[in-house]
Image (tube, rainbow, N blue to C red):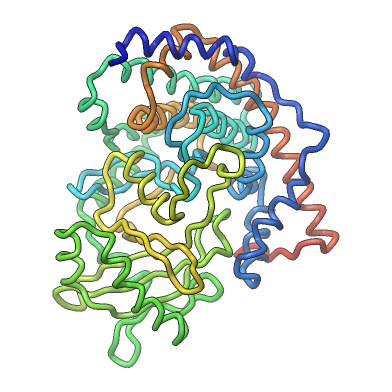
Length: 446
């Protein structure tokens, strides 16, 4: 069995392959793919009527572009040397893919909350995407460049410090590590905003599934139905509705026995197609309304198409894995409090899907409204949460050994992040030019 000292030495040895200071460089290769072309390739098998919504959302700002362009950044990261220190990557670890949610034990937690791109890969890819998102958000908020740099530096430093702390803990202690949502409160500087945050967390702890019932449904001819809000939320057609009922049984079979028993206590009421996020727009996504004890006891499940991760083209794939199973397994591995209704299956035309509960309580921070001090503190928390997730799946002692006790790694990644944030702004402009020229069609404001 490898000793802790040997694992730490393995991490230090990785510095010979990729010195920590080497992470500072970003220079686009001469054959770098056009970012719009990358996005168009992704859209070939998506619902064509929704692609203008995707481009419209991405065109709104550089940060919105970053959210939708994980494939662009994955290719750029793959063009650089990497450490070979593998973890289960989130694959899209930007600031808005962290948030608050309720665990099965009804504890309010802060954690990663998006796993569509999860895949095994070098730990620094997630760290760099987080760092870039901090830089893009800070510049978009008009923060002074010194504050932009400091926020990025603190996000990566928090990751390093957390990983080194976790390297000293035992296996079960690391596995059960949690970040309580109350840790968000000290980050809010103004008394008025802190009061709102406290009230929001208090409501969240008391909340059941009832608020979405009023928001997402209405009573039509005496029956509860999901609301019609095209193109973002549209009732499933007869063929889609029949298919969803049929594949429900396949999804059920991927759950543990006790969770199947719980699911069997609900009945199928209605289903609708839903547009979600930025990068996911155009993939097939549905919401299903189930009723338990009575009509006032709802359960909302989200069924989302799972496709190949944007990372797969750039990393060793190993054994082929069902895309839905990949997402479910990645979420279970990375997230501290799992969803009891996570499952996966194959739908019509061989498309892969995963099922999860449409959270009764969840939310990400209002990054656009953050002061420099609030953004710095939030970035630090996200860095800590990312280290916790990576420590569950990778060799935390080797990663801690690579990072070391000095600030070399965070300074290098901060330099990269500032340069790549400028690249993101340039790519966002390229998309705007393509929209103006009619190369792609965008539906703004949806």
